[in-house]
Image (cartoon, rainbow, N blue to C red):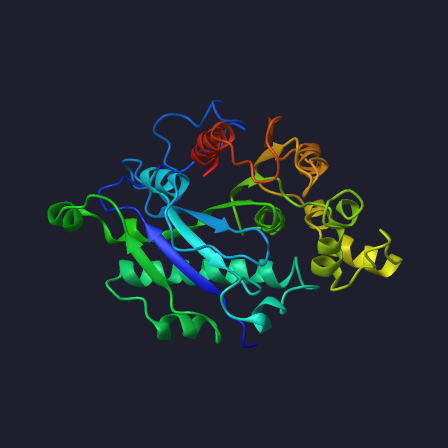
Length: 328
């Protein structure tokens, strides 16, 4: 396949502490935790985690891209001590029409697999760096035959002395402490990943696409549902589709995968969203709660699809970081 997956990793400075591991015993932030002094897996005797949690950033579209830019949300993640992995899966912009056209009809499979692959590449590269090695094109290509070289940047005021004292393991990413963070199609991907056992430990999703078939009758872009979910086209004069197309859209939806369970998920909804109607977020929240999986719903009545107001953006970021701190 000539299309490419692009991965970039941004790590905190070595002087940023590694967050402690979540300890089982509560289901919501602020609940009771395990007994004082208990050592969790992956911690040293003094309670220091050995590897950094990972935030997997997932863009929407799906035909858009994550640029190598730092936002206040990403900077906040780094300040909390999390490694941040940017993923541009096949179908993202930047590699030509062939790459873009490789995804429609395969959403929910190809893009989800690419995100899991990108995470494996990022974790492996962090281990190489922690062992004193350097990430290179050959390192990345050894893990997959068509990938981009993994790039990284280390941020934070790190002195030579602090760097020398830091454990090599603290620069590694912990594959068991991964959080999916995304909106719209990024929320679609995050919901899929929560349904895959062992992929992510938690998720923070904004206006996620959960049921493509149902959404086709309510969204302002029904043709998107048919094209991305089933690789089909739509007569612009009619809002209908065949049972076969409906079945394909249903099969690619996270709702179908979530029958097997999920991971603790924070859901943000803009009530005025016409692109991904709010019932998608409610459906995700209620499905998880019905299975006994922790979920919290944040509703922003004055926001639409981007949830771009200052109040909504900051509130979701703060609550998302609290959610990560509690569950990973």
